[in-house]
Image (cartoon, rainbow, N blue to C red; front, top):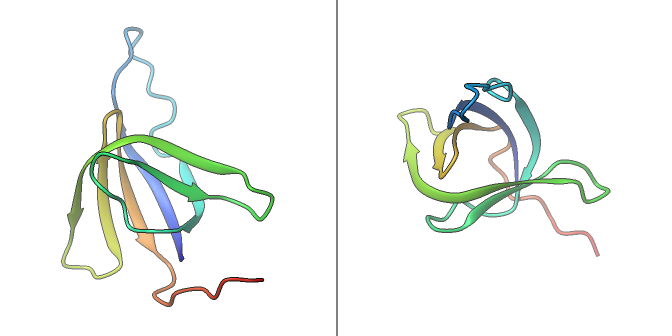
Length: 91
């Protein structure tokens, strides 16, 4: 489990041209690396609130070891990994 900050940097334009969620920041925990064809899930608080994306189209790594770009069917996210260590599961 990685502590991450996901910033939406692009979204598909709806017919009205509204892109109000661009720039929105999601902080939480990514349970596994994003997988092409599946939705990405970021758990945002200990009460179970989560953000689920549409299916991932591609994942791009950068020269920075702690940054990924994830393109979904509807959006593109910049994922900054705040913590490189795997968090221990609580019983």
